[in-house]
Structure formats: structure tokens, C-alpha cells
Length: 123
Image (cartoon, rainbow, N blue to C red; front, side, top):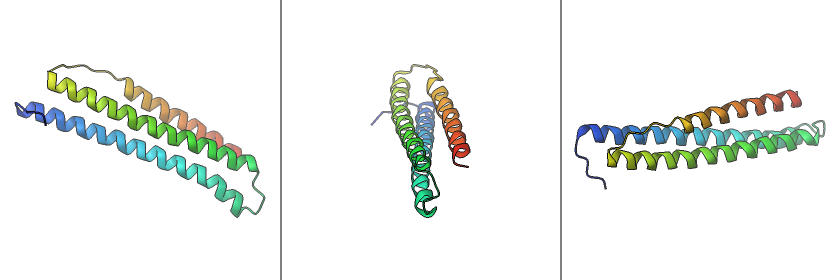
């Protein structure tokens, strides 16, 4: 356990934890979306009584797996950032790096493009 010397350090640690939990929620949302997309292609094929092309289900599975892996990546990067910031707070070091935020924005943009392509292809 870290010995907190003042209210500012406690506030910094609590803010770091809230940020980490936001990254975890984002990761969970990506994983859930990936699972939904992967399973919806299979469901469409089964319910569509053969009218749905096999490539539709396969494309859904591929997009879904990519989203699940993206969620996993976001969770790992969020955890790494949490520990780095925790160490920096304990050492009294102030560093700012927007790299993880940019990675998340890119993941969301790529996800949006993939889902749009999937929706167009399956329409």
C-alpha cells in the first residue's frame, strides 16, 4: 500500500483509478460488440433459412473477432497506463502522453468503418 502524504496525491490516485475503470468499460463494450457482431452473422444464416450468403456470416465472424481483440488490446494498454501513472504519482513525476487516447480514437474509427462496410455488404 502506498503512503499518501497529502490530499492532492490521494486525489491523483483516485483520478487515475477512475480513468482506468473508464478504459475497462471501453474494453468491455468493444468485446461485447465484437461478440454481438460475430454471433449475429451466424444467427442471420440460421434464421434466414439459407438465404443469407455464407460470406456474410464469415465476414461477421471476422469483424467480431477483430473487435474482441481490439477490446483486449485496450484493456491491456489501459492497465499498463494505470501502473505507469501510479508509479509517476508515487515518484512525484508529471508526464503527459496522449498516445493511448489517440490509439482509442483510431480503434473507434476503424471499428466504425468496419461496421459500416459490414452493414453495407449484408444489406
